[in-house]
Length: 294
View 1 (cartoon, rainbow, N blue to C red):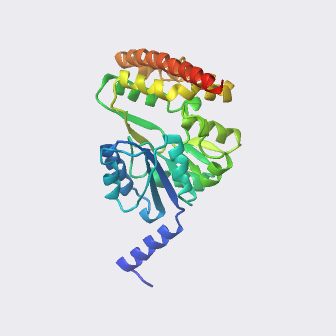
View 2: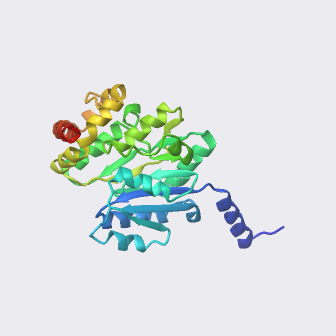
View 3: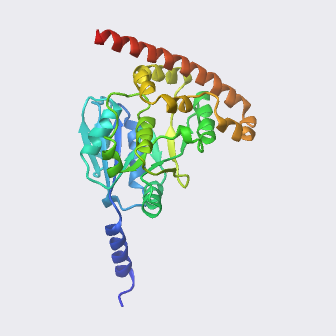
């Protein structure tokens, strides 16, 4: 019988060999500091790094993002001037792994994230998973958003697909390249409608470093909502539930909300502003597309 360090090393190697492959797809533009943090969290994963492929689709950053990616030998860098939903598809096309993880550049994974997601998918046979988020940041809006993320963890209408099998991704045709708005909800809805099995991976979470102000959030909402009219037209019934400002989750977590009245009030006021700017962006996009079609 072989024992000692050599035996343990062989056992670890055999376990790594048996693990399925995973690709982490990250669209980015001008997020050098955030990418450093995210890629460091990938390097700390409790999952064989040899089984992880990281594809960064960089939309021609000018702040040194490419140089940061070059520090990590496991990163495959693709430079393309495309929006993030198109970048996600391009990143997937450059891989052949069994599982896909779609992460934003301002996120950070806990050490057990990948191992937990793969275990759920392998043992419970789920095709795609949502991952709870925990927001960070010192601005009032960031702290209000942190409260919101906790409250909506168990809201089935506010789930966005982050982890999925390659088979499921290919079956629905990947991300809808005609609609930038809510691309994570978009593919989540199409995966559900195609009959793929889903659950929220409550055993882990992602840090989301959203350290912006409410005005910055409102400007982003205007930009990303310019294709919202296409999304609402495509998913009429679903969108009413997804974007209803009066959520049942608020009632379920009433005790927590009452403990943070200032944050919840700030959240509601901020959401009202982003809804207004989002609606304005949607109207702008609708008028723009209507004029183009004439």
